[in-house]
Image (tube, helix red, strand yellow):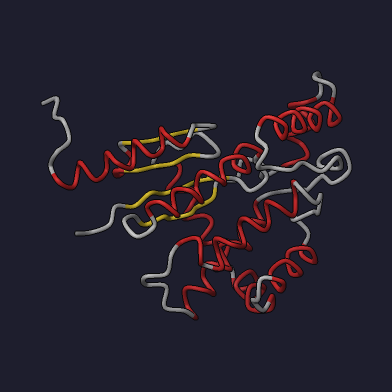
Length: 230
């Protein structure tokens, strides 16, 4: 039986995608051998400084933004927020971050047979988690190439291979494909789980039980046990 696909759209600079990472990891742990997880990106923070400055202009600025993040860290104790996030470290864009991560996906897919490899064990998945951690917990500017290259190297991939995909334009093309797919599926933002060819969409800070219920519905669809309203 063909494994159903769960497509996950997120922006790496989005606090809610950082919070939701643990749910994606749990999904992979619980269902990794029964579903395909297809990780894609939407550039909500394409012009990150302009967006954040405008959003928080009348709310207390970056200090208030960071304080909110700190409160979220107390509520969701699986995340950590550095005091310099947005107050000091202010990435220009998530777009080139996503391009780098698409390049990592491409290099890994070309160099390794990923058939049967669990999503969580792929270098691409580890890179996304590491980039999020580097920004939110360590206040590293992950939109800067030198930081990106160091993180990629630490993960065991040659940054030159990733840079080559950037220079060739392949990474930009792959990201554009993600953005077009998000548009076609009417993805509202980050994070968003899409299943069942767009018929099941979960947007925002949704709990794991709801995600799990929607995945179980995929299996019922496959076996013909799903309820029909026709």
